[in-house]
Image 1 (cartoon, rainbow, N blue to C red):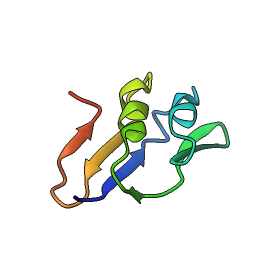
Image 2: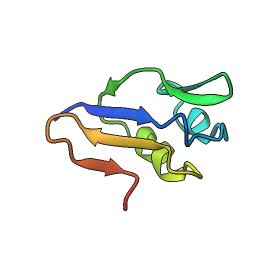
Image 3: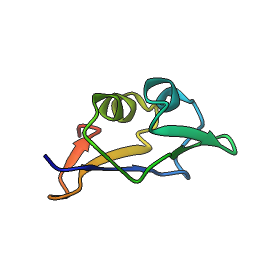
Image 4: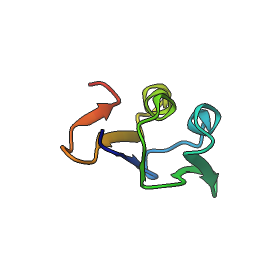
Length: 74
């Protein structure tokens, strides 16, 4: 199983903190905007939930090996 790459578009982020609530081990707020605590992580449903529930779709989760977008679903 491949690791996942987690990214946040801080220019799109509005600081709603949904990601930090869903996945506090993976996301934190810095200067009022989300930041991933790690750039790659083991597969974790919480990362997908955070990306899917971000109100501005600022979070993306990709398969590190293939580059396939895992969340948010298009």
